[in-house]
Image 1: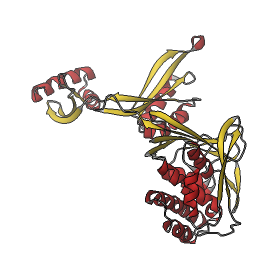
Image 2 (image 1 turned 120 degrees about the horizontal axis):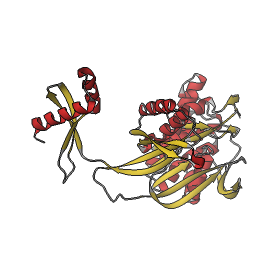
Image 3 (image 1 turned 135 degrees about the vertical axis):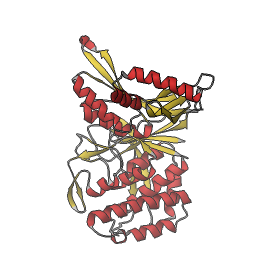
Image 4 (image 1 turned 45 degrees about the horizontal axis):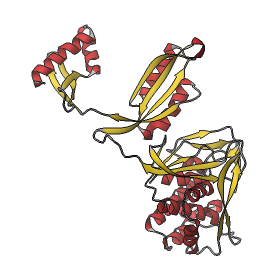
Length: 392
């Protein structure tokens, strides 16, 4: 199974766990696992709620009054001594270790000395262990997450009023694509940030799948938009063309507010990212307004970062992200000594077609400049020499 996690209104432990349960993870399995953790009588319940008109499952945890400020060592021993499946133990330990190191860095101490406060509370242990167990039980082999919304403003914590994202949350989200929102308050908690960081295999658009289940995990607060984390669970679609085919995404935005100079600069900046290609197509919009479709080819794992770069470089209000496949013709590169010096060539070896050889565009432009010749003439001369040298 593969899964896609939509964090448009943030990520928290209870929302992620609720989404897994709503998608098919048996709450009875969660209760059985928690009974072996030595936490006392812990009661876990779910209820259907509505958040801004969208149905979701909301998780509540009831436990004995637990005022213990557990250290990382205490939580590690608790999980290591449990009967949880080995992959679940490993993921739960990795999540808490990540939190411990982030808290230690924020407070200038060591992970072993960190008092976990809210993170060490029973409900957070339930969330961390539950999410790891849910992913394992549902057989999710690959999880892709959207850009993670963090919120705005401030949040009240055990350490006082802090800006959003709180310092520990910000550290836990290093390397994760995030976005602020017009929604006030904390949308992504430290536990939610750590869980996404540990369990997400990548960030960007949804992979092609045959959808089997959808889970909505509802947060506690009512917001102007549905406060739910959405999990889409399915089976990867088997490709009909396997050899030399790779999964890509096409990002597009129609732009009518930038000059040609500014568009050219934006395209150049995008080429400096992990983009596979960047191009522009003239179009006519409503009322006859001329515009340009800016298109970017990218790998799925890079799509989130590149979409943010398109927004930043152009000021556009939206980017379309479309999954696609591309069939890549077999090719190889070689360097030949020609009458104009050392030149790199590409050779295409498409089955059933005549091999083609051509000089790299950068080398042609360099030699055209050096010899004061048209670049097309240089390319033709080099192609003929290469054919004679290689026999292609």
